[in-house]
Image 1: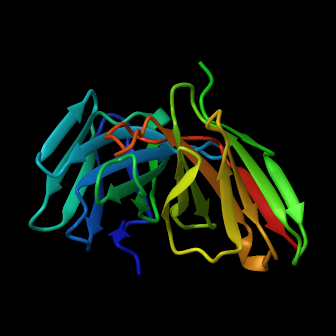
Image 2: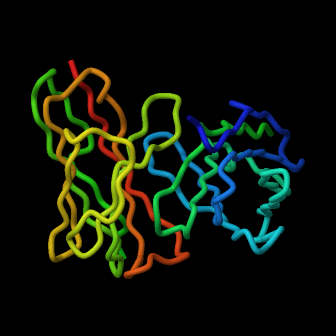
Length: 113
Length: 116
């Protein structure tokens, strides 16, 4: 049973605009959440993370928001750039990011010039 | 500073055979995890090794086994290969320590395994 869900398989955004990628989870024991970006023929690359004690974390153009009551998190990319075109995976862990990660199926983001 | 390296890059096997995949963790990392990524899916956790022992295991059959060496490198072995084992196998490392940590896992580029 999929405990982490990314319901949008793909998203297309114009360069310079905001990209919003969404993720829902069902396991209330999840305590740590991460976003990874994956280019074809490469492994996933860590982007940003958030622990359950926070509701927002920023790193440059990337911001992750966590709504624990709704079991929902989102990744905002502002402004979006063509190099951001990749598959984005949401992942969650019941302890910390060093333990088993549960991944969603990914959202393919295309940023057009 | 080399990141996580995996070998081989690609592998073709037939049903019933056995395969061994290899992983060298990022320098300074002592914990290695293995994931299976089927086409169109997210990575699925297979198991994690710390101090040469399996610390955590996902929902995979006993045909999947592993090993960690004193230099922290790791192997994933799969016996009696099935067509459904065709996937990208990813290795990830982290500076876990005895209780893990909140340092993110770093992934290699994976081994693409095809079963004929």
